[in-house]
Length: 91
Image (cartoon, rainbow, N blue to C red; front, side, top):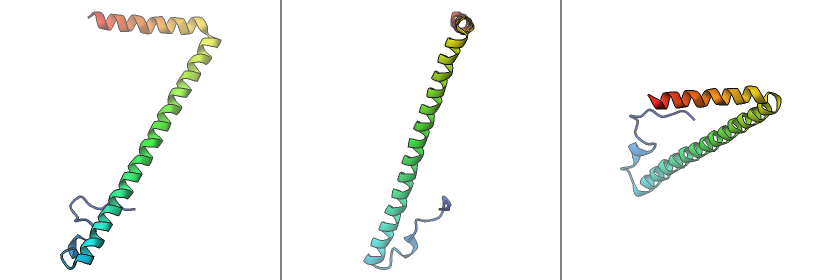
């Protein structure tokens, strides 16, 4: 669905002054448009949360694999990160 411009009036607003039926239809159109946008935002939010979960899962798997295959290297990297954190907090 194409995005309406920010300055355009809601669908049906130009004929809303005509009759009560037209006003009711205009309100329904605006509500339907609002509901569509809310549904779209909800869907995008759920997708973003799922993508974040996938990234954290992959990061955890990579960390566990690294610990199993190269424990001393992983320990050295963790120590270096701790040293950098301590050095930056000190100053």
